Every structure is written in C-alpha cells, then in structure tokens.
Length: 191
Image 1 (cartoon, rainbow, N blue to C red):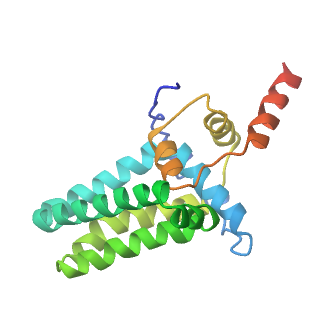
Image 2: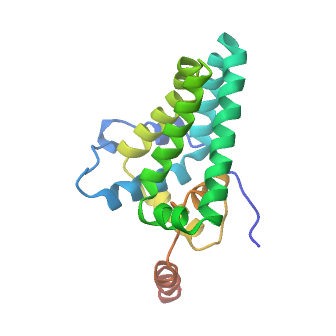
Image 3: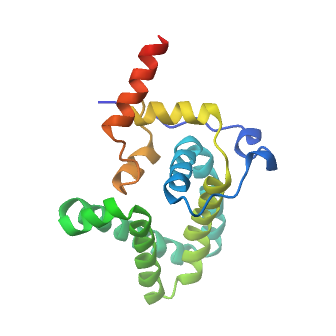
C-alpha cells in the first residue's frame, strides 16, 4: 500500500504566476474542465490548504461558535454522503454518472442544514468562500508540465495524497485501467 504524502507548498510564482497561465475554462467541454480542476486540486493542494486555513481562522476568530457548528454540519453531511455513496447502489450510480452534481448536492445539503441553525453567513464565508476561491483558481489555472507529471504519478498509484483520497471518496478521481496502462507503456517505451 502506498503511503500518504502531502505535496510540497508550491512557490507563489508557480501558484499565481501571471495572466498568461490563466484561461477561461471551456464550459461546453465539461470533462476537460473537470480534468483541469481535479489535476490542479491534486497539484496545488498544500497551497489551497494554506489559503483555506487562513480564511477559516479569520472567520473563526470573528464567530467561533457558528464556525464550529458549520464544521460539524459539513463534516456530518460529507461523511453521510460518502457512506451512502458506498453502501447504496442508487446513490453510488448517481455519484459515478454525475460527480459534479453529487458534490453540489452535498454542499447544498450542508447549506440547508446550516440555515436551520442560523449560521448561514458564517458557513458562507468560513467554509464556502475558501472553496469558491479554490474552485476558481483550479478552474482558471492552466496546467504546466510538472503538474501533469505529478498527477500521472498519483493516478498510477505511485503516490497518494490527502486530496487524492478525498477525490476518490467523492468519485472524482476514478482512473481507468486503460489510462494507467497507457502511462506505464509510455514510461517503458522511453526507458
């Protein structure tokens, strides 16, 4: 079994280089856009974690009780969705066929439960705002060669990261045997 590794913190000029390394995603090609987002999540995960923690801490200091309630609700909804996705055939099929809708449903369920506890604004800024920033960066940031190589290693099972485990649980990183086989064949031909 491959041990879990945290990716290194990417330098600022790699994480946010300049406008030439950002482009609007093609919303008509959802698989390509999804691929860009997933691969950027894997490559920049430590940077995203640091950014989310900064926003989370700021909001947490301003509203500690509401932030704790938000964490609890989102954690329970996420764990429930992962359990249901693994143990209920209908939900498992939906998650495989519509992974983005599944993630959106989890977020909407969290939002609905938070509205019952009057913690919507804290939830929005403390949890959803960092997710929005991360999603925006992952959507607009073009991949570079190092990004592609790191992601191939993760997809082939040579490395495992926390975001990779999370994406697996959400059904976003199910690499087919064909992709892994093509990667390994390409490495053998070069070597």
